Length: 319
Image (cartoon, rainbow, N blue to C red):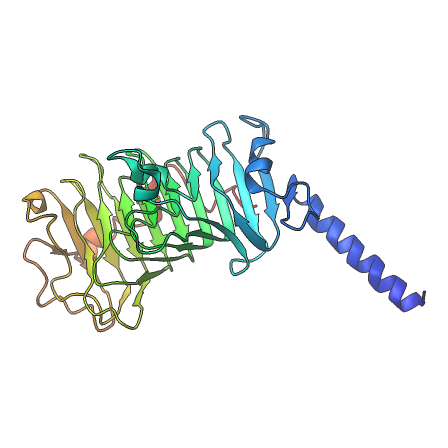
């Protein structure tokens, strides 16, 4: 073998070994890692570990339901690339037929643990337009998602847990009806929120007494070609809170902005607000009467440190 070729092969091998040494486990659908299934890797992790466990997932399509259990805190999942590391499943309400709460069993990935991190993945519910079908279900506290694509239709992202704090950075979330819903305190920064039908983006169920709910900052609200009328949100529960700050709103956003849920009077206890949004959908002249426009003083409360309290999602969690 020629010396130059030997050197190149040695360099490539060293690089691969170095990359693998940065992680505790490697998942690869082609069999080149420690596991071929993400769930198998999670099942093999130590419960309540003394330090963070990092699992690297190579490019591939992983057709499986993934559950990160409550005894798996301090777990990181890192995909090789957001475009080609895909976790997908196709459960939906009617398919499971588990009664009135079937929605909550339809997830592709469910995160029940605290202090979870995911990066560079696509999480998809591929059931199509067949009703409730969750892609990502999160109920843990202090959970971070960076550069994640969440693909689905109705109920794509369930941000759950009355006391849960969740941070979504540089993510893409798409869906049809109520495709971001739940009770968590969740901050979305620099995310694309893409509507696939004329419907509602958010359906918060914020708990009574919670100060925030869903906060969108510097996000882009986009739409598929045939979409013309989308509401920013409607209250799933009577204390729903959702705020859009310095976001770019496309022309598909309905002039009223917000909507009641089944013409109930929940709007008397909700808090829906905006500040300094831009784009053709940002005109607030015809916004529904019970929504709010934040002033500069009130907007100062919507800083990361205020929203999350003693937790900084960018501190001591870099994978």
